[in-house]
Image (cartoon, rainbow, N blue to C red):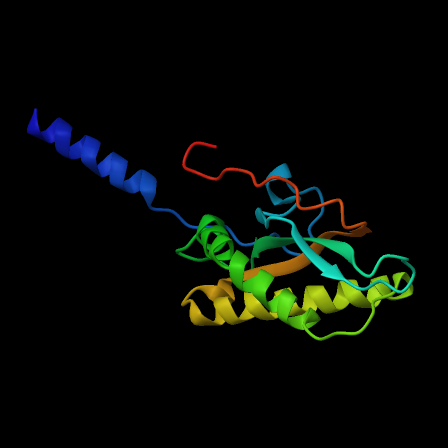
Length: 170
């Protein structure tokens, strides 16, 4: 009976240990579905920033920004993409603060500059992500890319979308 419990314990422990496989070689074709797409993604809550917009008649318009981080392994690791995902979730407030700081004291924005604005926001978010990965012992095992998932202007009557609940079971 003790042997059965010990064996069951080893099975449970072994099931929690694992490695992440590296991405397939670039020249390999016909790879399995496991290697297609990103291993993990973290979508942050929408950020709404009131700013003057040159093309608008009202003094301020709302700029809606949604940031997502895409996670992919670079090499074999004793960590998992879920570890990176948890780190990225904890960066949400830092990324938002960095983006808000970027806009503090800025002049009028323009619809003509949307691409430049998107690139600046992405660069600011990526800076925060890169800094966090440098602090982690397995950070070099992963590539985490910050991206602007959506970026659009609305009038001041449109606010932020309701927050989604995050927890253990949803």
